[in-house]
Each structure stands twice: as C-alpha cells, then as structure tokens.
Amino acid sequence: MSSTSSPSSRARVGLAVSLLLPTAFLGACSVIGGGSCHGTEADLKGLAAQPLFDAAPARAATPVNYRSVGVTTACDDDSSGEPWLHADRLYTYPGEPAEVIAYYTEKAASAGWRSAPDPDPWSSPATGADACWTKTEQGRHLVLNVDFRTEAYSPAPEVGNGIAYEVSVGSTADGGGGSEASCWQ
Image 1: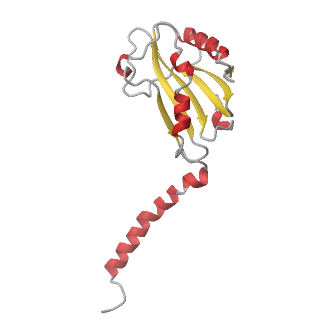
Image 2 (image 1 turned 120 degrees about the vertical axis):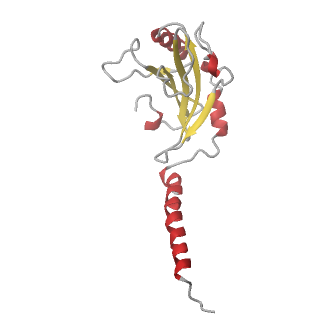
Image 3 (image 1 turned 30 degrees about the vertical axis):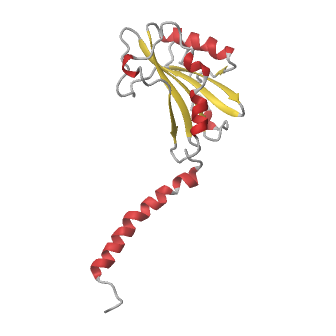
C-alpha cells in the first residue's frame, strides 16, 4: 500500500480547505471588530423594562396585527464595533407626528432624558421623521428614539385612520457613549 494519496483525495482536501478557510476568517470578525451579543440578555431585559414603553399618549394603541408582540429586544452585531442592544415597541396614533413628539418630549424630560435635536438645518420637531433623547443610567449611555419610519416592518403595521410609530431605547453592549450611542449618526 502506498503512502501517497490519490489525485482525487488531494482534490477533495483542497476543496474542503477552500470552502472552510473563508468562514474561519469571517468568524474572527467579531473577535477582531469588538464585542459580541453573547451574555447581553440581562442588559436587553433592562432596556425592555424602560418605563417610557408604557407611557404612550392617550388614544395610542398597539397595531391590530401586533397586539401579541409588546416590547421586542435585539442585539445587532455588525462586527465593526460594539454590538447595538435595543428594545422596541410599535404604536398607532389617530393624530399627527408633532403631537406624539410633543408628548414624548414632556415625558422624556420628566424622566431625566435630554433632548438631542437633529443637526440637519432643514429638520424640525414638527416635520421630522423622528425625535431623539439621551441619558446615562447606572453608568450606561442610553438613546431614546421615537421614529415614524415604520415601512421596514413586515407585515406593515395596520394603523386604520392614523399613523404608526416606534419607540426604541438602545445602547452599545458595553454601555459606553461612543459614536454608536449617538442619536444622529
């Protein structure tokens, strides 16, 4: 029996290496790029418990097709920095975005959130697609966002006669105040 391998077995080994090597490098991106989403469950639970999720304006409701959802949480790890943790909730409202923003501006201020106006000179609270506030809580830099751009949801929120909006509270996985934790990126 010869100790040399056949050309077909060398080809199979070469194919296996060429298929597995790129995935080995991709798996290293999370290690090289920053943190990961592992072990963030307690932080996500803390974000979901933010009182402003239950402080919606009068007449605001959960969209009919999202009634059983409530607050959702996620960790987005794009491997280029610290993962972004967030808790989100959808609402419908039978009024105007400016009314919703005015409501959350008052509620956020009374809860210690600081307004972070959009630096776009053409944006205003009455015409903007979203509004944002920040605060530090137990050493964690938090971002509160009220956003009226809900077209990415699938299925689309059923709003009837009104508007849909999302309330989101987020933070980097390490809780720091880096560029990922700013309102306007």
